[in-house]
Amino acid sequence: TVQQVTEDLASCSVDNSSLAANEAEVSESAPDSPPADVAEPPKQQTSSSSSSSSTAVARPTANSLAPASDGCHRIWRRPYKKCREETDEVSSWYSHKRHVIVFTYSGKPVYSRYGEEDGLSGTTGALSAIVSKMASFFFSNGSSPPDCLRYMLAGEHVFAFLEKGPLWLVCVSRSGDTYADMVRLLERVHMQIITILTAGIERTLLNRPTYDMRGLLGGTESVVNSMIRWCTQDMFLQFEGFEPLPCAPSARAAAVEALKAARVPNVLFAFLMAGQRILAAVSNRQYRLDALDLGMI
Image (tube, rainbow, N blue to C red; front, top):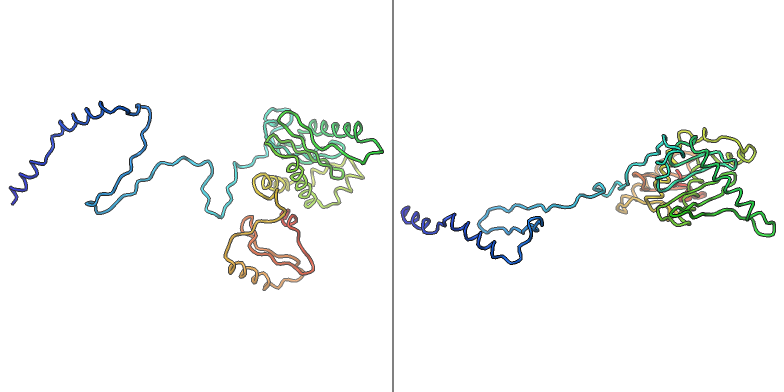
């Protein structure tokens, strides 16, 4: 009856004041209670059999420094900035961890990863003087095979030099790069410049050492910048190949058949790309495209 149920509930009721007193006594008698400034780990909540539905409790996670990846987009580092307002007369230009500089025999700047080339004539002139003096002091002996300056160590900085015809390429790094990796990076930079300007620019510089070739690179520096960024943040520097797009064999076969079905005259090579990855590639049987050439493209 209603009266009996009411009596049972009254007998099971607990006085709130006595419960609070008991909890205070238990907290005072606890021997190893954590200090107030130390946060206790969250307790796991167990689902009750009387509840009709359970609610998932999200645990706090640390904020990631990199954006979430969906498997299709590459996680790059912070956006690259050329900092055109910088010159070799300001201290901020020297704070960059990895410089790439290209100049001619006469010391004229051709390309710089950071800063405006017009404001780096003092640095390129000094590097050109160092190269020529080292060659005259140590490598001018006719009995020994011709050699040139390869690298220098200055504190935590490594200066790697690469001679390519009338061009000198220098990489200055304090990022812990090895000499082999720095030279490999400079070779990629030279290959990218020759891909843009063709090999005729070297003959022009040999005939006219004071020729200013910066005007020919105008508007294409972003290509060289992207290639350097690709080499420093990806595996392109370590492998002479290209990255394929992960997909099912049936999907790749369908893409290859689609390229073969496209009847376009005088085509030597065709490929499908998804971002920076290759989905399918077909080529003429008489010709072969090198993986590095494809990377330059």
